[in-house]
Length: 111
Image (cartoon, rainbow, N blue to C red; front, side, top):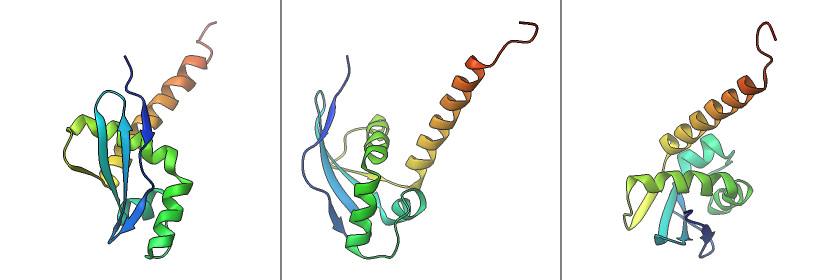
């Protein structure tokens, strides 16, 4: 059984973060905050203004939602903050999966 996800409200920039709400089919609504630091490090955010943070969020929304889904394993608090650590974990998992895919397609020695 999967827990489908869809954004429930428009993202808004707040002091040092972008806040958004998504609706999980099985778990219900969850509010997330993506820190400015994470947006700068992993989503190419430029400048510190609200519009720059929102633009970065919009450009990288699918990646951010994937990180949000993974972060739900930490529980269901009122607001779940997504930090650089969450994005690093997601990148590590993606790299491991890509390496496994490459290794599966490689010819075997003596084949």
